[in-house]
Length: 294
Image 1 (cartoon, rainbow, N blue to C red):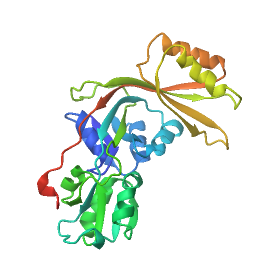
Image 2: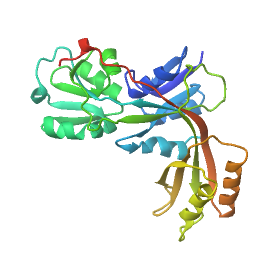
Image 3: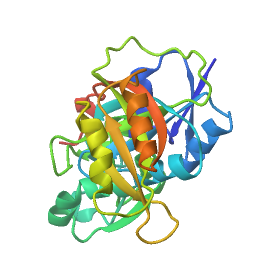
Image 4: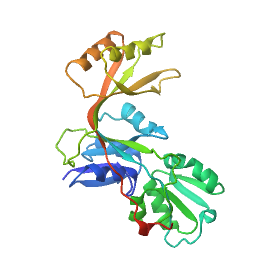
């Protein structure tokens, strides 16, 4: 049976993404994104699922940079899930917001709830964790005046109580997760209908000259290829050196993409296809009334 690695432990949003798209697979949670990506790169697991981008906080740069600089594993699918952040406490906690002294969670989860924390819990200390699942695990062990920010799965997994529901600052909060596989072996996925298809490529310019990026984008524009995202990231070779990650809203084909690659190569650009894949939008687990204190 195939094993899927994910950013763990149990109860993370990445765990939710894995459960949403896979059937009949073993799963293994890793404490950090690099550990998870190393695992699939070293054939410890058949696939890996890691967060790529959040609608509020943007790109998960650790994931992108590690895929570019440290491992060579293609993206084979994308899953998008709605993100609902809840304030979780130990079931024995009987106080209110003012009684919570420490909030535990991942940096992105904290940032997604910045206004709630600022207005409702300004005196609480913040302790950052490697994942929302780890934050829930900490609160389970510490009890007392500690709280975690996480999802309903982590509340159920660690037996926590939901003190406040939906504390994220913006309603349209979604996260994109990348599914990565080094060896293209069949793995059982649920029968889902793809919302769209994407091809993600990396482009490195030959040098910083006037109009260079315009020339790159023109290669897609006149072929009427729609770009849903373009982002620059440092090459880590010195100030001012960047590469570009470009998402094209169509699968890789035998005509348009090779022509684009040839045109960009003629300009002196380096091109790498990071993956061509289906994109799935799925629902997150719902909140059960018996788990909330409201």
